[in-house]
Every structure is written in structure tokens, then in C-alpha cells.
Image (cartoon, rainbow, N blue to C red; front, side, top):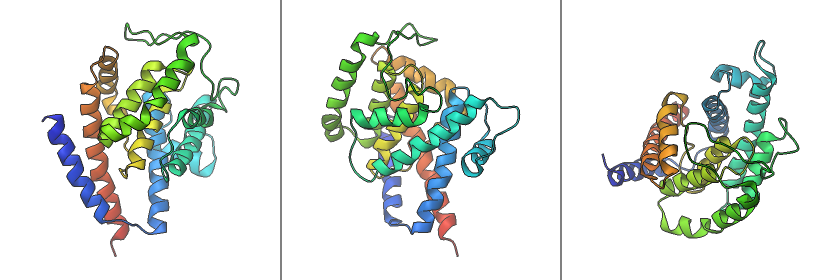
Length: 251
């Protein structure tokens, strides 16, 4: 199936979602809690976090630690939950700038490494599994400023799904932080989708291989595999959202 056909399917499903809105406050709160756990679990798991989805729920909702699991895994869950909350707040408007990106990284990373949270890296990094080399530290700030200055124009010219993919790709390729780049990119991707009215889109760990391969292809300028992958993930997210809303509105 071509990207155009998949985008058309996404648009049709989005029309179904829009017809169900507005939802009641209680339904919205339940959906927010559901996605806070699901996105936190999946985004962390892609990066090697060992907490299961049920364990992530216990950490976020009950504030408990899981025996035998690393402290860092707990801190990543709590930090991602905080960053997710900020994404939800930002999604109520159209703000998407350099400050917002730094803030999302700070919220995620501050318990792990407060010195580097919300700050651009000062050391070169290597992305394993690829020959691509991100910009050196001296060029990161300028690259981020150029990137964020392009967002308004890209928002006007791209379909929301394509914009979300472009944002993820650009941030991942600049790799501005010492750690947490992938999670910040997925949060930014979802911010773009939510600001356009789309449901939160989760990239499950089961497709990690395809996801990494698509990102690697973008290193050489071929964004099509990643946009195709994301389009499928958005379509699946819409189906899940419709299922959830139906279950919440059944009497």
C-alpha cells in the first residue's frame, strides 16, 4: 500500500474520531492515564528499560519500586511520566519550539543526570549500528535552532503524520542530548500528532527492529520508510483509540 493510500485511511479514521468528540472529563482522564502508562512503558522498553507494562503502572500510579529492577529503570519511568504530562499540556495549544524540546528532555532526564538534563551535549556521540555521525557538540545548538525555525513552515506544508515523522527524524539525527534522544523524539512526535487532534501513537517494542532500520535509512536522506512505518502506527493507534472510546461510552 502506498503512503498516499495509508494517509487516506488515516484521514478517514480521524474523521470517525472527530465525530465522537468532545468526550467527557472522566473519559479524558482515563484515556490520559492509559496512554501515560502505555507510552512510558513502550518508549522506555525500546531503549532497553526492563520494567514491564504492569510494573510501569505500579511505579507511576502507586509510587512503589520493583524488587530486582535497576534504580535507573524506575527513574526513567517517573521522568517519562512527567514529560508526558507536559506534552498533554502543550497539546492544548500550538507551541512547539526549542524551549519546549529542552523542557521535555529536562523533565525526563533530571532525576538521572541533573547536570545534563535539558542541556545540549558537550561530547561527541556515536550511534551504534550505523555509519552516520551526528553533528559535533560545537554545532548542536545551531543545528537545533535551524531545525526549530523550520517547524512553522513544515507544519503548514506537511500532513500531520508527515510532520510528526519529520520532527522525530530531525531530532534523532541531530542527537542533541547525551542520552534520551529517542524518547524525546517520540514525545515530540506525539506532541505534533496531539496538537493536530490525533491520538497518542505508541511504537511497540515488537517493531523495534523495523523502527531502527527506518531511522537508519533516514540518516542518508531516505525518510520514506520511517513515514510509512509511522503511518501504520498512527492507523493502529486510531483503531485502539476508537476501541477505548467505545468501551468508555457503553452503558
